[in-house]
Structure formats: C-alpha cells, structure tokens
Length: 268
Image (cartoon, rainbow, N blue to C red):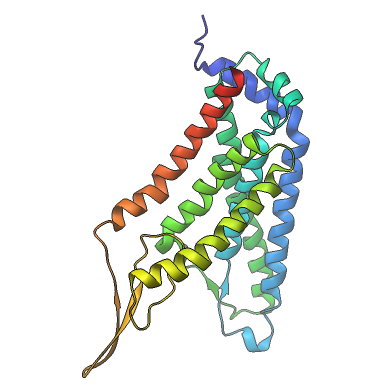
C-alpha cells in the first residue's frame, strides 16, 4: 500500500507526467539560457581588441547571473498550476500528495536548472575560449571564482530567490513572474533608499560611513583619522552570525514552508 505522504514510485509517475506535458516550456527555458549565455559571450568578445588583451576575461558573472535567472524563471513556472482556480482544480485531482508536488517543484526550480546551467556554461566557454586563443595566444582567462568569497550572497540570490518566486507562483495568479519581479524591485528600492540610507546612518553617525550591501550582517565601515594616518575600520556586531544564518538558511526554508502550507490550504 502506498504512503499517503510520500511514495517514490508515485513521485516518479508524477514527474514523468509533468515532464511529458511541459517539455516545451522546459525546452524554451533552455533556449533562453543559451541566448543569455550568447549575450555574455558577445559582450566579452568586444573586450578582446588590442587595448583589452592584457586584461583577463572574466567568465564567472555569466554563470552567476544566468543561473540565477534560470532558477527564478523555473521557480515562477513550477507551481503555475495553482495560480488560477481552473488550473488548480485540475492539479489537485492528481493522486499525489502536496509534499510530492512541492518536492517536484523544488527539483525543477533549483538543482536541475543549476546543473543544466553549469553544464551549458562550461561547454560554451570551453569552445569559445579555445577559438579565441587560436587568434590571441596570450589571451588571459580569469579562473579565480571570486564569488565563492561572497557565498552568502550567492546563496541568497539562488535559494531565497527560488523560494520567493515559488511563493509568487502560488499567490499572484497569471504573470506571477513579472508581478514578483515588481514586488522585489519596490522592496529593493525601499531597503536601499530608506533602510541603508537613513536607518543605518542614524545608527552609525560616523564620518566616512560606507553604504553597506543589503544583507544586514555585512559590517559597515568608518574612516578613522589619527596622527599615524587614515585607516578604515569595520563596525562588527555580536549578532552578525545570527543575521547571516537567518538570511542564508532560515529565510528560504521559512518561505518553502509557507508555500507548502498554502498548497495544503488550497487543497482543504
């Protein structure tokens, strides 16, 4: 007898059905990813002329941005069946549990797009770099993945972004991707203009306060003038690790739980 909460065979049947019915949308997403990669490659190609040849070509921004966009679009699409009443009714007739639906949506939103994107990115740059080096043997490629130094931001960009767009797919109806983007842009403007501008300046009224990045655990800096010279010091807090833990792990998990509870609420 199959488990009402999760059954591997039933989950496999459900995944096969979803892939069979939505393969065109997945293929279109792959075409969009390739087009975005082509744009980045074209942009870097313009830097190859004489005056730029001494500088290395940085290939990693294309990976981060393309992967983020793929995850966001996939997350906005994965639960589209719950966005309108008619589509939701048809979806709920499937003999699968909400946990299985959420797990499938998470798989096609996060790990699968990330793996596909990383594979296409690697193959594309290998082919292009080989071709460029035939014309410019001295061409340098930046192989230092500096983004790992800011892995927390990468996690927020991917994990929290995926959870936010899945929640948007559950609650905002049609065109949920565009609506979610609008909400994020408005929230970003509010955080950057009010939160970082007025609030942090009121908390740290020091000369030379640097505008910090949106994540609150990043310490702001002050410029210290002394007889020995000018130095830049960071203002640390005992709560930095807690802030980081919240943004990197707790926030996306909370959002995924909210998505699951919304699914159960609509089923009831």
